[in-house]
Amino acid sequence: MPPYTLRLTAQHTEGESDIGFGLVTGNADHYLVVAMSPLGYVSIWEETGEDQITHLPWQTWPHVRPGAAENEIWLDNDGQQVTVRLNRESLWTGRVDDGENQVGLYGQSFGAPAGVDYSNLTIWQGE
View (cartoon, rainbow, N blue to C red):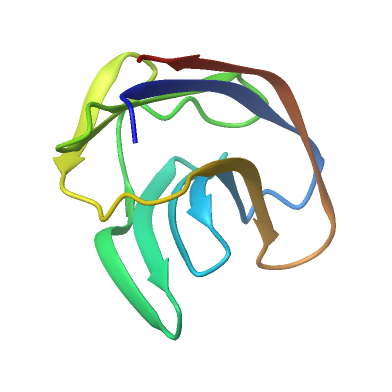
């Protein structure tokens, strides 16, 4: 897989604030999720069939903009490792098995319904 970069901007717009939203990359059998919450939490994990590999458990992080503020996830995959930035601040770097990749959006409420505006997704791919 050639190197690629993903940049997502999104914000919580209404309803439940105990939610997670973010970016997914991979395929139906194996994917990586980078998620944040308007309550100031962030998490990164991989789903591999029936297994979940937690790279960064849900935890507060000072660079998550709370409430309805817009947040940006920036993911770089150079073919060897993945680097994730949140609001331009380095969050995590690690190795992820890379196969056929698709890009998607993640959203989950841990309570009542909520609204999220996924305002922009930019994809750059090298050769």
